Amino acid sequence: MPRRWVAAVACLAALVALACEGGGEGEPRPTRGTPQPGGSGGIAALGDSITTGFGSCLVLTSCERNSWSTGDGLRVESLYRRLRDRDPAIRGRAHNHARPGARAAGLEEQARAAVRDDVDHVTVLIGANDACRGGIEAMTPVAEFRAGIDRGLRALRAGRPKARVLVVSVPDLYRLWEVGHADSRAVRAWRRGVCPALLADATSTAPADRARRAAFRDRITAYNAQLVAACRAYGSRCRHDGGAVHRVRFTLELVNPLDWFHPNAAGQDRLAEVTWRASGFAD
Image (tube, rainbow, N blue to C red):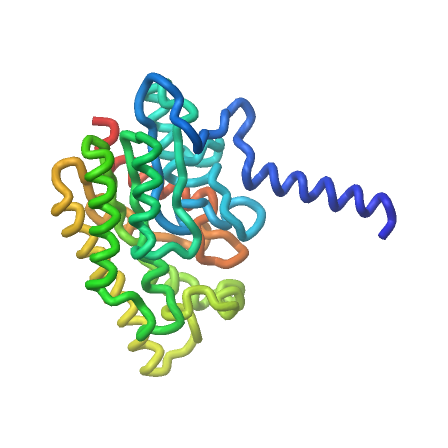
């Protein structure tokens, strides 16, 4: 490979790394280690790839600077940025424990990490991966999903009983199929195994495929009902978003053009807007 090509590739790799991991100009990145002394206890995010900002930069990888919850970049007015605007003392105190592929069963481990952070605000958005499995029969049973949520919330309540917790509804993924199944670019991307329980054979009108999609939609509805009940059981320090995220009318302009599934920066900003209004963090 000519030397000038090597240099060009190295420069491109550096730019991608900066886009996915670096903060905006003049924006310090949140620390994820020992909390700084003084001020508010900051915010921790629990959940899956949506909360890691997956696919919101230039490549299909996590891009936490664009997270609706803890992002510190300039393209998303995250909950962290909004809290920091109200209380500059939390500067540098955002912790993102969400993981791509995470399901409700892994929420307890993330919650214990948030407890160690000594945060005063916690967001929880999880459930898409419990539904987006190989098929309807592989989806997490509703009772098992609820048990995972309860274990995570119990860990938070035991370790940070005064923290304010926002439990967010699962996005309306069926809506994504509705707006995307007629788009050839989205259908091609989905064939690579994106949420097969819903998006496999996306253009099929066969009765079995229509029934599969309806069963998927019903399972998300059931998960959302359990999230409401789990937050209510937690007590007064937990607030549910009232279905605000599920009601977001996602279009293809709000998802990235690589997998046509995860929110892009505009989609993350929309999530931040509706969750902030529902959070009560500004009260």
